[in-house]
Amino acid sequence: MKKRIISRFTVILFVIGFMVATQYNTINTVDQRDTRDTWEIRQELSREKQIHSELLLEIGSLDETLGKYTGKAAEDPESILQETVEELRNLAGLTEVTGPGITLEVRPSLEAVAMGTEITEIPPDLLVRLVNEVNRFNGIEMAISGQRIVNTTAIRDINGYTTVNGERISTPPFAIAITSGSMEETRKLFSHLTASEMHDDFYIDDLTIAISEPQEQLTLPPFDGDLNTTHLEALEEE
Picture (cartoon, rainbow, N blue to C red):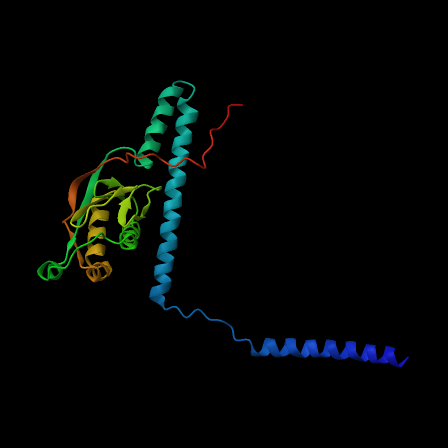
């Protein structure tokens, strides 16, 4: 009888303790407030609107492609298929591209030259950071020392040499050509890179970036390597 009373009493005390702890937690929990200022919130909203705009453009492009297939496929299926293949080749960087752009020349700093400092390969991580900085803009195409940058491009160190697409990049100076969709975007990219902190990062490695004025026409070579299709499978006909 005593054991039963003690057990019940223990359960009651456990329940009461749990309720008190929960109440204490609720009272002492401070609501997390959004501490961002108006400018930061506006920037976040701008990024979200940009993503939304990009998605709408992509949906519109896909709808247009679908409309071509449904409207012309019955009349001339080979022509519409060839057109789609060419569009995909352009997206994959397999064709030469010409458009508004700028040229970056990576060269040794004046101090390094004056002091006779030996200029070695540009570090792969520094080159990757530059590529990521440029890719913040839409519609960008790029070629580093004649090597076209595509989705499968690898920038890495191979046996002590910095390589792009498996090809060694020459010791500075070398050029990076960049095109965009319009002169307006090119000017924005020019202004952004001119004021970028990347110059300080390059200077630490005894390098500088010289940026050309925006050009109306700049031509980039096509990607001439093998695309990695390891994870792609051919669709079998039903």
